[in-house]
Amino acid sequence: MQVLAVGLGGMAGALLRYGLGLALAPPVGSFPVGTLTANWIGCLALGWFHSRFSGAPLSPAVRGGIATGLIGSFTTFSTFSVETHQLLQSGQMGTACLYLLASLWGGLFLLRTGVRLARGKEDRAC
Image (cartoon, rainbow, N blue to C red):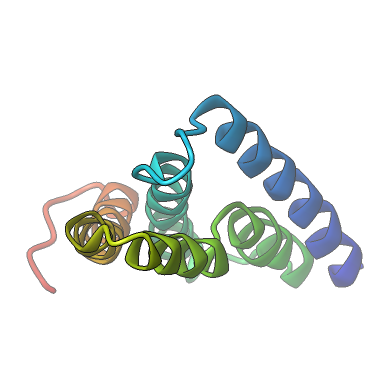
C-alpha cells in the first residue's frame, strides 16, 4: 500500500511541477523561475508537513505518499543542477550565483517558515 501511495503522490507531484514549469517557462538561458518556484513551494510544504505531523499517528502510506511522493516529485534537485550548469556554461556567472543563493537560502528560509506555520507560534530556534 505504501508503494502505491508514493507512486500516486509522485504522479500528482510530477504533473503539478510540469504544469508550473509550463506556466512559468522562461526563455532559454534566462533565470529558471519555474524550478526555483517549485523548489521553494516544496520547501515550505515539506517544512510544514514534517513539523505538523511529526508526532501524529499518520500511516506510513499517507506520510510517504505526501512527503516522498507528492512533495518529493514536485521539487527537483537535478533540474536545479542542470540549469545552474547551463547558466555557467553560457557565461552567466552572476545569474548562476544568484540562482544558487536564492535556491539554497530561500529554500532554507521557506522550510523554516513552514515549520513555524505548523507550530502556530513564533519559534526563534534555528
